[in-house]
Amino acid sequence: MKRIIIIYTLLLSGSFLNADIEAGKAVYKANCAICHTVNGGSALGPDFNIVAYTRHKEEIADYAKDPYKYNKAFGYSANAMPTLPLTDKEFEDVADYISSLQPFKKWMIKKR
Ligand code: HEC
Image 1 (cartoon, rainbow, N blue to C red):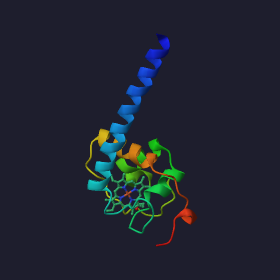
Image 2: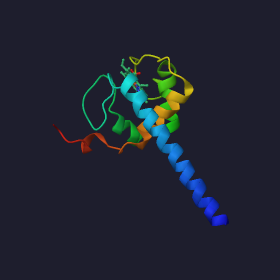
Image 3: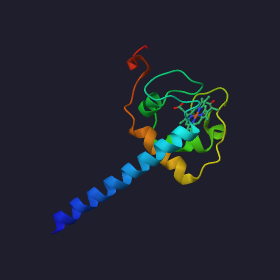
Image 4: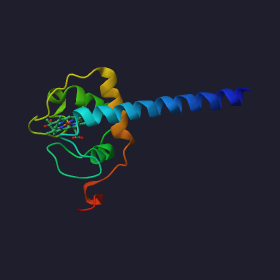
């Protein structure tokens, strides 16, 4: 019985996780995609697969919520990313989505 409960809990938490990633993908498309690519590409901001390689989910959410506050700590000399008017849930979801991406280092991305 105990085992069944554990498996059931794992399944449930798994489906919640996916829901957040799916919601986060929608947040990405609507709010980030004009400046950030996925799977390599060039845009104003860094590609999110590279971000997935170098940052934890919490760091991604913190930066997205307040880029002005964190840009120096992240190694930038200036801040060009706007502070976006999203809810905390949307920031958490988009951070989940970015963390779920295949992590790339710059040299791993194929030239197109
Ligand atoms: C108008 C363009 C623009 C938009 C829209 C934008 N960003 Fe950015 N982002 C940037 C730029 C440029 C940087 C580089 C640092 C800076 O200028 O603040 C950056 C940096 C970041 C970083 C730090 C990356 C790192 O590891 O160094 C994260 C995380 C990030 N953006 C997340 C997001 C998320 C999530 C969204 C959407 C909710 C978003 N950005 C929307 C332009 C943008």
